[in-house]
Length: 204
Image: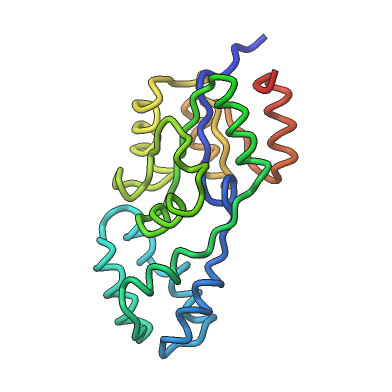
């Protein structure tokens, strides 16, 4: 029988919170020279977001680039609210983390993200403060599936290999964890993830 994991690592987007950049795009477009679909595509598909989420751009630099590309006419504070108010908690997963914590299992957030999103989630979702640690791409200077960010997670957790259980919705990120010997669950739905957690015996 396999030893139970000693810590559980949660991706943030599409695991603990759902999100929709379309919401931001529609709000931003009202203050832009670009229609919402093009704003959405620019935010989600251009290299700009990756540069921001790996710490290569500050919040101000990201905002300046967005304004230059889209003609956005608002202030940074307004932009920040529009850009980051796109998240909804995935309640069964939030409840899962609370149960694991009650059972004494350390839990961590491991996310490709940016400081605007994290500030918004920290303000609006109390569950975010209930983790033992946070490895965030913009702080580490690398994004999953880059090995550098996985090494940072191992160092913070003080565990390696099968001692770690990792939940993520992106196959390439899960595979990078599996390659390091981590136990992994590809999140396809909260129901499937919860069933697998139950099977592993972490809710006993």
